[in-house]
Length: 119
Image (cartoon, rainbow, N blue to C red; front, side, top):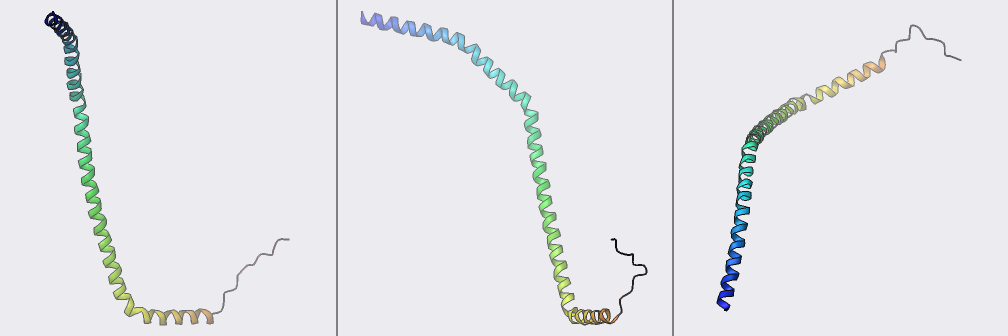
């Protein structure tokens, strides 16, 4: 008798699983079809995103190279300028002193017309 009850219980579980399979199999296939369709629709946008990312990375790399190139050239220009300016510094200081003395000695120009103050 127990074997018969176990057999009936297993038969009922099998029927339930078969019915569930019949109901769920089309839903699973529809889900797979929807995922495949969504993948095909979104694929151009993914490829566009990859292309924009690659192009952006290349542009950033080129920008870094140009920045370092110009920074190096500016540093070299400052270095050469310092090499040229340091020996000329005494001449520059003597010229500055002569200019300051000449400015102090020269009389100030008088204004041609001085308006009366407002009262």
